[in-house]
Image 1 (cartoon, rainbow, N blue to C red):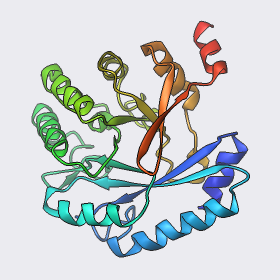
Image 2 (cartoon, helix red, strand yellow):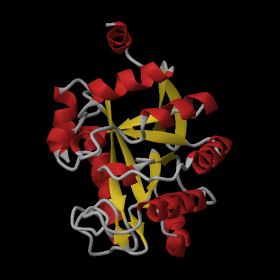
Image 3 (cartoon, rainbow, N blue to C red):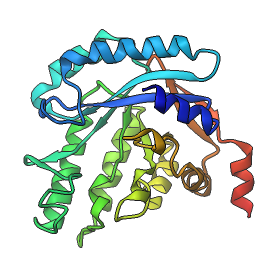
Length: 255
């Protein structure tokens, strides 16, 4: 964890938030802690927060994979600790991990329109729950470059309207620039819809290794600015606050 913090300091970040995975349905998943490990994870962040208090602001969060069967357990876990932010995401559809390079989805199988429809249906269902503050990588299904033939504008608009009504934010996830789709999550079109509805973004680099901390922020911030944003959202103890996008990024927009 200290390697992630050091990378954040090296590139000049003023704050870093750990948002490690909690996937209740996949206890053996190498990318997820178990419910029993959450306390150790949270305490580790508190120790590092104190150690680096004069260098960088360190915050504690979780990215919880949505699973309605374990909703009560999720609520219990996130309420036990004073996390700064909780993100919610979807990785599994009908038992298939749609982000795995070994999945049928990545290999071109399954009906594209059906999977997109199912994903949006589950995303809408996720909005019936209140354990989280941000929606992570909103349009993750496009990771491998697969796009639906059907237009889902109506469904997306309804989901975003619901998001605004619940005063939730979205993560602008920059890892998509490393994937076959080669663009951020969500797309420019969705970012523009969010701006129209007054939904704000926080930045996430989805860093599964220290070198990836802050990756592609030079592309993501101008993307927000071009959609009309002058501020982003940050969190402390689950409370959102607005921070201006740095002036040198505003200058970059004019170039």
